[in-house]
Image 1: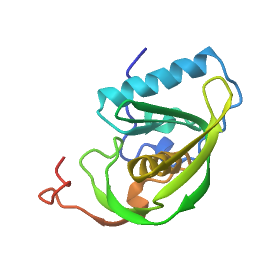
Image 2: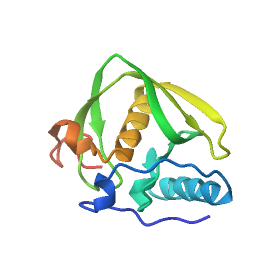
Image 3: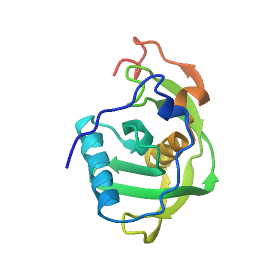
Length: 157
């Protein structure tokens, strides 16, 4: 597989609504594997296809040993609220406090086209919402309650 170059800053692909995926096959599976390879190389938690310049509705999330891939994800249920610090691989060095749902249920498809659901709370819920936002051209900076200064805890990672 391959490590892809990240789209960063004001790259227009980060502000576009990504297109739905209609074809499932080897090319999609290779792209998902590349997303995981890139995510791991960057020590991230989640990655959306637009972050590597591909305007398609695909996200991957890795927390510990748990790996999640979702094609055409839809946020079905969101409950509770909590605020935590977020960063983004496409906006290196920038961190902010963002309010998100505490628990979510997301429906989508896997690389073969099989319907799948992911239910998560805390970090998984936050990562799923963050990555789905990328598919709609929304960055965490659009939702940040405030930005952290580099000397603040969690601000200088």
